[in-house]
Length: 632
Image (cartoon, rainbow, N blue to C red; front, side):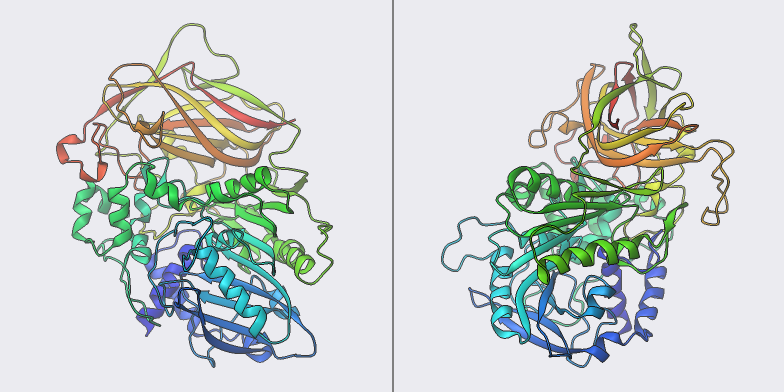
């Protein structure tokens, strides 16, 4: 029983996270499992009744649904629903979650809380399909997650007592994807939706970034890859035992990637799909949801974390797509959070070594999330919420700001050029020059100094990058000490002009805030570090160079030929303060967050051989630039 509970907690960490989100490993997850079993919070059990039902979908498949209804039946309540692939546990009408709903305020004021195991997962019937493709204009018994959501809401509003007929959906990460999905062909009773850290497209979220495989998520494919054919209340999959606490060394020892096949076979359907679909082909395109977000009717509040290593693409592009293609109430909130931090009750908000303030998540839950749902589910629902269109946290100044849109209106594009002698300047030299480095895929640049086995990396998103800037295979470009504040508010576009002696290469670009030498430490800093001259990672991204012109039609580099490679980094809202410096690092490995490119072009890197991995020399030309969105 404990083993199965542990499995549930581990994948819950992947989506919702536990109390410790700085660097999550197996031992820490087991500790959290023990905390779950000894919880003494009985509010839900004291104030709610619990009922479990199997709701029949239009094709006859039954989905397990758990309903928590307030014991106080003197008034009516809206329904708040989360659909999840991660289980409605605990099962049994006498077994209660310690906390229900999006936050404690919505739980304590009274709402009908509903959880559902999605099709093919846990105690629901049917066949699971990872990021099930949306079917427009469905006919007959055709089903997708939109129809399952519609059918569920239809049953709930007609069968649950004491409801006022209004429904809201929400969820973090994969449940956030299902919340987004509820917007498509939405039920008339669906009034408010909050996709949070929502997956938008698996080719750009979580497992793949611009064609590069996020190797550090390899073990997480167990959660999604193993299928079941009958309802179950127990975990049916296991995570591979890698036999070491040194993740970097494990993946070095298992390069090329084909060596990892010893740990999984074709029964891991999702890993097989990743290995067989290495371009942005029809398989991935059909599973994306961003392109379908048009003419949305319910009110939407998209939520994300500026330091979410898993899902930045999804939240930003969900908001932007709805904003562009719909005329509904649509807002966005981004705070100084890692994956799902805003749903936790921890007072002190710390990511890695960086403290951003106290009470930030509670502020969001009480003054933003609760206000949003109450307005559209219990209130006037006229859109006059008093909330900002975009409520964003400046991760440099460590303060909230509100805007009428995102990115803000009063911004401009500004380019900085990568010059020899490690300089980042607003003007490029007229003479052609390059900054060169030797990239060895057998000795890749680590993404973190920490020696740990991390189930899903998070802490590194604010990590000190000094260790990388001091390596010869990392190029560093830095401004002079800033004489005034510089605030980035929007996306970042790196326009590299490069060459390589090989035929393949990855390109990683990092934007870094260099602190002054007199910056004082806080209690949150790791023992071996100081905030004096700290190199705080603000944003990073990778592109597998073969996809520089097209995500669907990869092509090799021509050796020693100057080639443009553009790479978009997801939005930031960060002020580089006066006295700080802006730094950009360019490298070709970021291991094992990202798998090592052999640097010899092969059609499928999952089938690369030992002899394909070769040392190559890369050059970055001095007309390479990084384009910032600057707040005026």
